[in-house]
Length: 386
Image 1 (tube, rainbow, N blue to C red):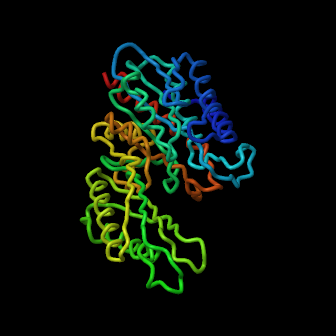
Image 2 (tube, rainbow, N blue to C red; image 1 turned 60 degrees about the vertical axis):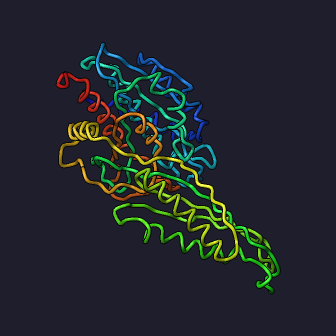
Image 3 (cartoon, rainbow, N blue to C red; image 1 turned 90 degrees about the horizontal axis):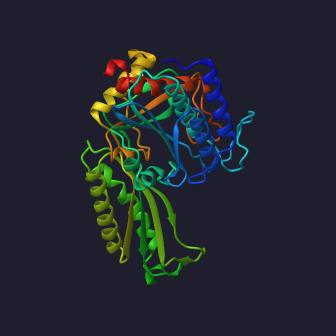
């Protein structure tokens, strides 16, 4: 089942339209309308408003397995610095993560599958809102995604700068890290900067704590427990000559298992309270479990490898890639269903990273991504799978 030139042209047109009109988390109104319009025009049943602004298209061919294919739709709060014709028309918003390409590729696969009947089963095309730190995957699951659209397995894909065009990468097991946030309130006693002995300096305490937190990974976890603890904010004080009453520290935690998440949470609390006590201050810790780790299941990873191999050949499928410490809320779907998440190479001569104001999804990858989705359906539901 090939991706023909006419469909490639359509995918390119859809992507450019989406790139020019980026929409933020849970604001994907025109994006969802475009998706629903294309699906309906090709005879695919559509349910809008799943997880607030999400869209699910369902296509059945008799009885058989049921799988979900997921693409994310939202943009980033970024000022685009590109100057091509399809650059963002919404100031301060930009498709700098390639979700416009993800949406176009899954639409292309839906159209291609709708035009053929040599497969048996049901495919749910899941167009998810709010991937960028707003947890749209969780919201869709909580809105009954898998009760309303039963899936034996669910699959995701992300474009990956740094990986050559025409190449896929995937692991059995971890692909993306969890994402948690923390806030630590250090309470001291303010006073004149010229007389620190009469105060409890929350800034000095916070400074010691920032250094102490680095020992969580280097000295308190086993070397095999990959993790990152990063302090990203310190807020305290407003005047040159005043020691502030309190200082706030904020940051993020990344790792690959719930056990490591809980261990880091406990250590972070222990170090905060202990360091504060040493300085005569107190510490209160707020820890938020945001995104779980993205962990591929074995059988579904094998299916994804087979589909990628059918698309680009065995030499272009990397099976031992280094997992990323970035996060992905597709993990909420994998927490509920078996499945696999794969990276699609988009690089040609050079690489502009994701979340960069000069980023633009490579249109040359559209056909490859759509062909992978089609091959995945055929591997589960095609003639050779029966």
